[in-house]
Length: 368
Image (cartoon, rainbow, N blue to C red):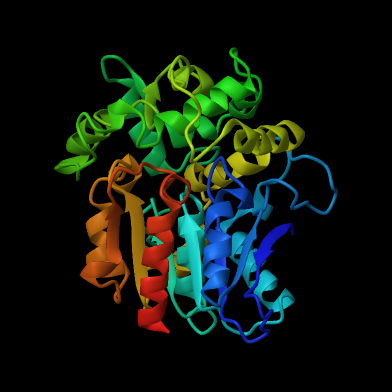
C-alpha cells in the first residue's frame, strides 16, 4: 500500500492519527494541500492510494482487467485495507477517518463496523445512508445488475432523450477503455472532468445545487434527470464524450495546475481505470453489496461531520440521502458539523483547502 505521510515537526510517536481516503478519479495526491497543515497542528496524517489506484499494488503486481474477479473490491475488503494500514502504522486508534467522494462510504463503513478503532468520521461530498437492507428474495438467475439499479436504468432509458446513470456506465466493460483513450486525449479529458465538477463551471451554479424533490419511483427518475449530465448521461455517450468541449477556456486554476494534473495523468496512464471502476461494479452489480446487509439498520455512533462544496451536486445526487444521513444514519452529527464551503465544487479539499483544514481542525478539537 502506497501512502503519503506527514508528521508533526517533533515527529511525535504519540500524535493522533488522521487518515485521508480519496475518491474517483483521484489518488492520495488529492490531499496534498491538507497533509502539511494538519501535521503542523499536531496530527500524524496518512493518505493511501486505495485498492485499484496508483502505486498500491495487488498480489500479482499486474494491472486489473475487467475479467478479473470482483471479490477483492467488496467494501469489506476496502475497510480491511484501512484497518490493516492502521495496525501497520503501529496504532490501535484513529482520531478521525476522512473520506471524499467514493472514499466517503469507505470511511463511513470504517466508522460503522469498528467504532472501537475509529473515534470520529468525516464524510465529504457523498452522503451516507447506511448499510443496505437484507434482500427479501433471491436474485434472478443470470442477473448482472442489482434489481434496484436494473429498474432505474430501464426507467432512465425511457426518458426523452434517453439517459443512463454514470455509476451504471462505469460498471460496463467499455468504460475503462473509453476513459483511458478519450478522443481528445487524456490530458484534455481529465482537465474537462475536473473542471465540470468544480465550482469554476458555471453550469454548477445555474441553478445552484439543492435537495431534489422525489415522490415515488417516477419522481425519483424525474429528479435524477434534472442532475447535470456528468451524473445522468445521454444514453449513447461515453464518460469522456459527456464532458468533451467543457475544459476551461482560461488558464489552469490554482487549485489544480497543469503540473499537478500531470501526476494524475501519468498514474492513470500506467495503471488504467479498471481497478478504480471495479468499485462501481460492486456498487451496482447483482449481490455486490449483499455482505453489507449484515449491518442493516446499524447507525454510526461516533462523532460525524459532513463537508462539501456549496456548488457540489454530489451532496444531493441521491434524493433524500442527505437528510437520512443527518437525521438517522449518523446519530452524532451536529448541525454545525454539516458544512458547505461557499463557492467550492466537488473537489472541495483541492479547491478550498484552507477552509477544509479550518473545519477539520475545529471538528477534531471538539471531539478530541
